[in-house]
Amino acid sequence: MQSERKIDLRLLRHRYGDEMREKFWTTVHEGRPTKGMPAWKEVFTDEQFDHIFSFLLTVQSESND
Image (cartoon, rainbow, N blue to C red; front, side, top):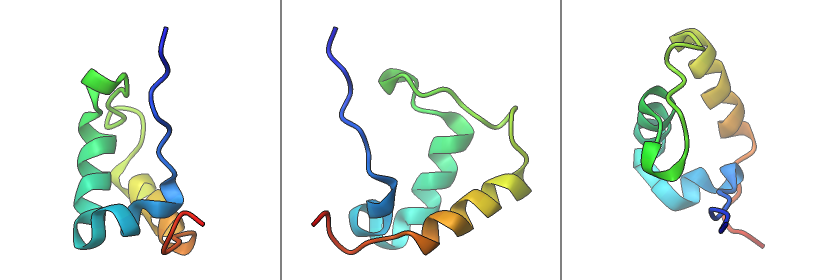
């Protein structure tokens, strides 16, 4: 069994730039079934997703150093 590459959530801005919010929102709402990530739209409210995204903004790094 091969594990998937882990995504460093501190690098979302570096990776997606201006599309960071859209990528986050689509990923958590719809999931990524082909990568084994379920959709979370039935688990969390949109307000909770906003709070999670706000937190992620506070931990962003410009590089993976």
